[in-house]
Image (cartoon, rainbow, N blue to C red; front, side):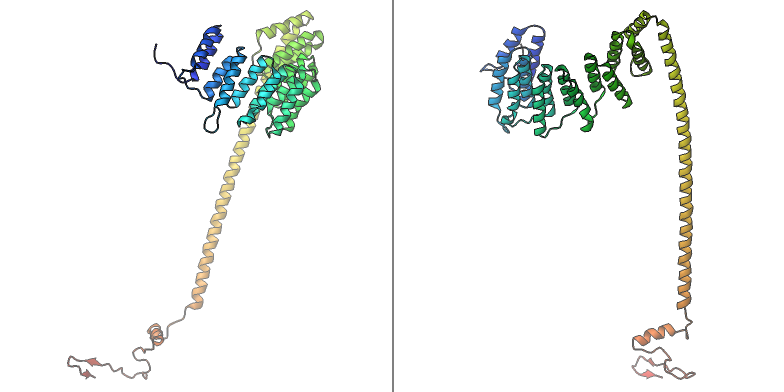
Length: 397
């Protein structure tokens, strides 16, 4: 063969494949080989977790415990990280698969010792295991601890607690957990609604299940085909007294473009109606559906026409508003220009004075400099005597 793979990430998947094919001995040989003292295979948190998961899911709890102890021993944060939240969740899975629920809770609570902080998904995983085994009180304790660690429950937490209560025949408490989502500002999706409808149907509480089905549609959450089928089968199963309700569910399916009314469901309803001498009801149901679909198309076209007309009106209004603004701006600009021109004219009119002599300005300037302009101070009509200096330095008059 070629060079051995020294990255441990591949060995967990390889072991899972062997287990899946029923080759347990081969899987364990692989495990022993890569963890032998002389092995050079390198393992980190993710690769350790894959092997741990392969052991835990295939009833090799003791081997999983030994490996987990090794991981804890090597864990030295921040220098070396060999366990994380998933490591502990994998061990929770392994303990619960073996029916050792107290040990599962205990190992979950050890996370803090190794500076590992559990997240909502880890809490949900443990709550799910406890709920599946009717350990509702224990699940509620874990839920309380979740809040004490400043973690807020999500939709999955509430639904898991609801299902746990349903299994323990605590129906009102289960419904309360679902309803609490509104207080927590959580938004259950189609899957969450299916689970409460399915749970209530399983408890023969069809009217209550119908309430949540109606609530779901009021919130414009599209039911899955599984939700429709759960209700329809339940109504048909009751018999003649609930066939009208079954037909209503079938009508909802036929009007919902997101799902398909299967042949199995159609035949189930048709057979039930036929058994009660109501063969014509199915044809009437299809007629009603076609009529309502046509009415819906007409309403959509009318709404589209109204929307287009409204859009045109809004565009015209915006254009008119823009034109009015432009006109107002132009008027304001013209008024401002006129005001400036008027002010300038007024200012020029107040300050403009005729000069007494051509040299009035020059005279004023020279007088400020302590000089006299030519002719200043001489009698009027007196000739101005000028002097020149000849080249010999004598002044000539």
